[in-house]
Length: 143
Image (cartoon, rainbow, N blue to C red; front, side, top):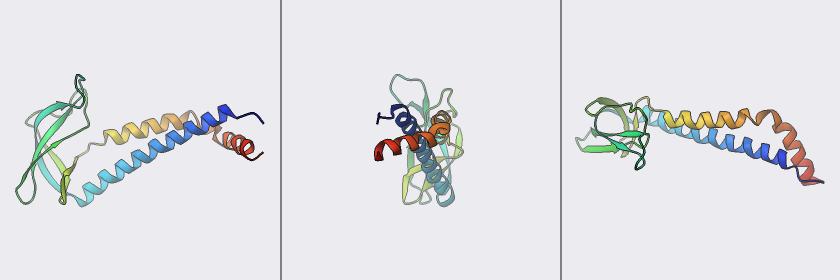
């Protein structure tokens, strides 16, 4: 029996979409748990930095103080063009009291949306063919 190349490709495409959906959900749960269980604090944007050298999207560096009065600076890895924040702007953050370097900027779910969007695209182009692809692969594998 001939190898079902197209069906295998469709199944692979669907699987990649499922992986992106899992990453998106994992990031969402992590951020939500930090908001629910973390400490809410006010931070000040002290600088904007480029996430990658020589590329324009910039991300904020935020200074905040923990409950015990220690100063921390968080360098976000989620850059945007145009920037969402301005230097000197006060923003709400949530941090893990056991690990103050684990920070979530309030309302910042950009990467969750990016991975969910990529999952949707992969699923959109594969979902209709998955049942027939699984059937063809199953038949090829066991015949």
